[in-house]
Image (tube, rainbow, N blue to C red; front, side):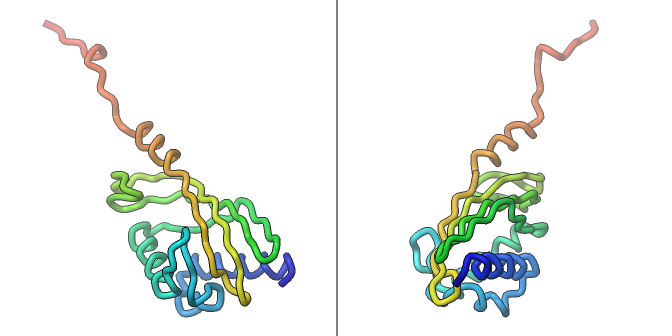
Amino acid sequence: MTRNDLADLYHGYIACLNHQDWAHLSHFVHPNVTYNGTRVGLAGYRAMLERDFQEIPDLVFHIQLLVADPPTVASRLNFNVTPRGEFFGLPINGRKVRFDENVFYECIDGKFAHVWSVIDKAAIEQQLVDQTPHTHDQDRHCDD
């Protein structure tokens, strides 16, 4: 597989995710796929993605950076989303957050067989701090 073939495969994979075209996920993902070192298989990987879209109704994968060096793809993805409830154990509860994901894929037999993902949780935590309303007792004035 050439660099261009691998880049095209990745763009097709991202389009598949963004369209939630689960019937075609197997065109891109290996049946024995691992995620961060754990074998989840295609069914587990699909379930993880479906859960992500249920918890984040406005989820869209944006490719910021893509490097294809067969058999590996490295990508930086950007997200600007509004998760429901908790997200990565953080109480988002419908607030808009922006974050990035750095993800590496290893391709075997023309499909992504190993996925390693690191999400910038610290960026999300900082936004929650910045979005928290602050009350300052010293700013309150009482007229007697």
